[in-house]
Structure formats: C-alpha cells, structure tokens
Length: 90
Image 1: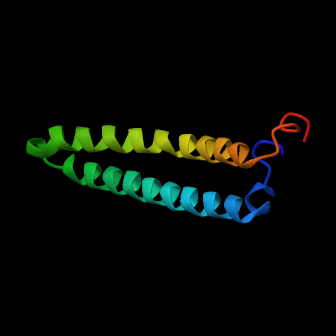
Image 2: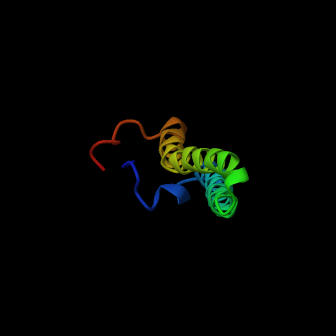
C-alpha cells in the first residue's frame, strides 16, 4: 500500500468507512473555516467588532491547518488496517 494512493479508499470496507469519516470531517472543517473567514471579514467593517473578527480569523486559520492533518490521519488509519510490508515500495 502506497501512501496517498488514490486507490487506497476502495481496498476494503474498513478503508471505505475511514474514507467516509475523514471526508465528512474534512468537509465540516473546510466549511467552518470558510464561514469564520466570511464572518470575520464582515466584523472588520466596524471598529467595535474588529477584535472578535480577529479571533474568527485565527480560529479559521487553525481549522484550515487541520485540513492536511485529517488527510495524514486518514493515511495512517489506512496503514493500521493492513498492508504494512509494502508501504514504501508501492
């Protein structure tokens, strides 16, 4: 099993389940980060809400940082399911 192979998600039912959960998490994080950035942008139109807008941007940035973390977690979860011997070789 090669890391980040596009065929990994169909290797077994467990792989399909891992893929589905990770895609759901990825989409929720992506949507939440984008929403926080839009709300943060709106809050920047008024000086009285700039402080909270800054926090929204920070939280949105952290969520965007979670995106590659979810994909890396997915690959390690695939590895836990099996095929340890040929990870590097493909």
